Image (cartoon, rainbow, N blue to C red; front, side, top):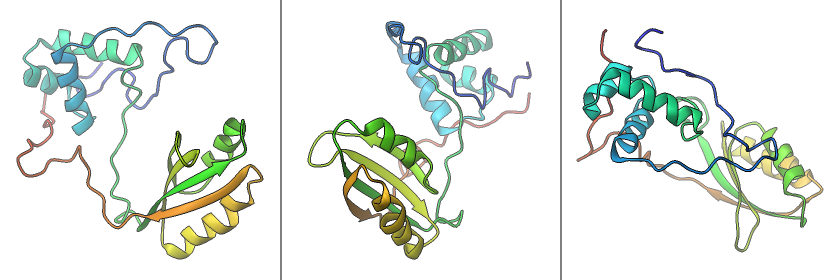
Length: 186
């Protein structure tokens, strides 16, 4: 396998036992090197094995084995790009809270997955049941999504929309924060 590619890159493995009804495998404790590898890959999922190994001060074989173990254990679920939604034509973002009919979570979740621009869905506790993050081209599209699509789902009892005015990417390099790993030519 070329040094620039991680095993399983682009795939999202299913954690052992999660979908089959079998109890999940107990969590293996992560050491400081594992945590450093995860931080580096969160900052740059395209970093080479060599680059990761150099930055955490282990051999390439050790880094490769650790990354594969983190993937196999379901700690790393896949590799993705962090998108600037505004520059990608999705300038309106909102968190939408939903109150839903009791015991309808699975049905509602499947319908929310189909919404254009849905980025994150969470079942939560508190004054509402579901927290949904959406990105849309503009406020008109957001309005249509809420008033037409969301409120037409029979199990959705009410919604509240919280417009996002500004976001801060905590994984992006910033003042006093080191830049992510660099991809090396191997």
